[in-house]
Image 1: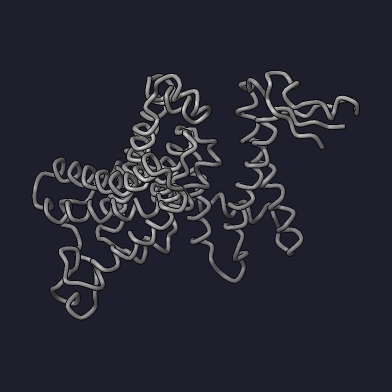
Image 2: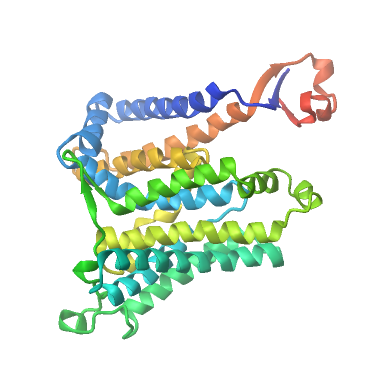
Length: 378
């Protein structure tokens, strides 16, 4: 008989081997699919590598595509660490874009530093408030946060659409062509976020800010009292309450933090890329749901989210650049799906180990396993 037994401690090498093995296995599975459909796998992968990372200007475009995924990935990773499932990263990002665009329009003629800080603060507040609604309902009304955050995505999308296309609001351009064809009011040129030129590529301020936030979150969760509370509440909520931890406040605070990060992502979208509130483009991009995939692939590690976001951004960038009759239409989406499937499958071997047991012991109480952890028998 074979038994899956929960690991009490995970070896350090396993934390690196599982993600690396999952990526390699996904690429191998993708190569098999390409071969079965009559495409050269090596040539296709080489094209993806060139258009996503190595050709002229490719890495700059990849970092641009990776920036919103970085913020929504961090948003999901933060909440999921406490087993609070924030599925509302998309709505929180949209609300952050609403707040940041208003700040950019209002402060566009001022100093760049004040304008950028104002946009970041406005985006963070709007995202935090939007996520805080679901957090408060979860903490004090025991409402399922998956449902509330998911529904709030649609509310945020419809609200942003109304502001630009359904009303004469502050966010809508009312002069020129905007009087005939509804469109968002662009922020002033002085509100555009700066970028840093490294010679071979250019990094936008949004990606740099997201990387700094990722490092800060890593330190917070690893070395602070709040990070310890998040871990304890996520693993053993009853023990946390017994120890006197204020679990309701922690849930609300973590959801607000998660939403604030997504909101800053919305601010980055306005200040770094579009320079206008564009509800339709934000909805079609699906950044919030892609961020959940990024967080899962990174195993909720904030530092790993940065690199996974670059990988996913490179795939998306290459897919857009290579669109045509000679390129497999669904390859990028298929690869992203395979990465997620094999990563989640790899988690099984990271959390459990396979043991052979005698038949007479297979029916024993699961509590008899080492550490008292439950085991699954096959």
